[in-house]
Amino acid sequence: MSLCPNPSRCELGATRLEMIVVTLIVIVLAVWLLHTLRFYQELTEKTVVENTIVNLRSGLRFRIADLILKGTPERQADLTESNPMVFAEAPPKGYLGEMRAPRDLPPGSWFYEQDRAELVYIPVLKNNLSLVDGTQPEKLRLRWQIKKAGKEAGAMAIDIVLLTPYTWF
Image (cartoon, rainbow, N blue to C red; front, side):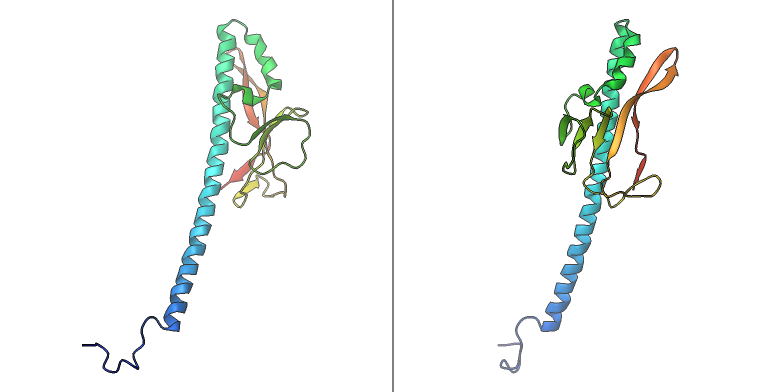
């Protein structure tokens, strides 16, 4: 027995209006999902960059401690011209090495610019990244350098210092 009293007039399946509504809902959900995914990808990139710098600082501090324990704390000054990546256990993904005035490098690249003695990162996602002054240059590069930070407890303080202050989120 059929539920439809007149099978020739009963429609099987969804109407056009129902299909349009379902399609629109799926499109809206897909756009929202892609936007959210992009947000979390950028947040992950920010976290990776900041953790890389923290790890490099730790490596630098271990090197300074080693110099102090060996009785040669005066050699800390030599570290200011060093590539911070030498203090990493392993370089981060995208590290291209030491270069002199590089031109076009892909986003996500780390490199040490020898002429300026700076560690540089080229961000991939920049929707929520800007310089402290509010600008967002087309070719934004984040830069760090090992510098003397003064004296602490009679010893020279050396740190990896951010040269391009930024806000990311």
